[in-house]
Amino acid sequence: MTHPPSYRQLEHAFDHLAPVYETVYGPHGNRVMAGLRQKNLAVLEAEFPPGARLLEIGCGVGEEAVYLARRGRVILATDVSPAMVGCTVRRAARAGLSHRITGLAIPAGQLDALRPRLPFDGAYASFGPLNCEPALPRLSAALFDLLSPGAVFVCSVMARWCPFEIGWFLLHLRPRQAFRRLGPGWHEAGLYGTGERRSVPVRYFTPRRLAREFRPYFLLERSLALGLLWPPPWLDHLYRRHSRLFDRLEPWETRLSGSFPWRMMGDHILLVFRRRE
Ligand SMILES: C[S@@+](CC[C@H](N)C(=O)[O-])C[C@H]1O[C@@H](n2cnc3c(N)ncnc32)[C@H](O)[C@@H]1O
Image (tube, protein in one colour):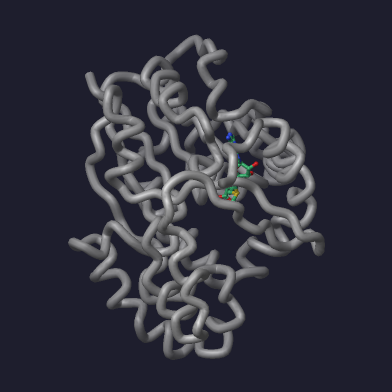
């Protein structure tokens, strides 16, 4: 059985990934990821009005922080990896947005150390930081203290049920791989891009499972599938080969992604939580 990650282990793994992250997962490196990102950003823009003071958890190389800061939001961008935070801060400077983006290297589970002068108007954690976080109840309590009453917390996490991936592996007669996300507890997940075999322990979530971690302090308002009929980002080559077919499926993807039961599955799921009053 895989053990939960230590922050040291996460820091080390993601520091290593930081220099190549943009090339591998940025809009030019991975077209599937770019599509998922668009949907994620549309929700963040709709939930957080211009002028909002936001806390970002697991900011990576700052793609979303810069996008939102360009549109008037002010962001404290945090990440367990100092190298990722460094990329975000430099990117903000290049974009002339240093006055709206501040970087801080801190794990999600230690955010209770923050003492802001004003509460944040909202928070978000996009594309997987929470899958790697071993202390979600502590994070949930910290967010309750850091956000204003009624504020929204948006996160996208790797889902437990990914129909496309299950179908793909079954088609290739690899049943163990097909159901690899389903077991409880922690699983080793590969980090691609560095040219070395590296992995970090992750947990895969259903909306209900994640909502349980946040329940005392947050209400789950809605969930949305991200990557239902489209292949997951690691099958980007498949998307590129058949992009016209997958683009034709896009309206269906959009239609299904918010409806039961599809909103509970996908490569990622996006969850919108509201802080209790
Ligand atoms: C897949 S990347 C996503 C980055 C960014 N949110 C994006 O959408 O491109 C996951 C990020 O979460 C960070 N991360 C992983 N575990 C974390 C934790 N426990 N606390 C804070 N950040 C974490 C990693 O360092 C990495 O930058």
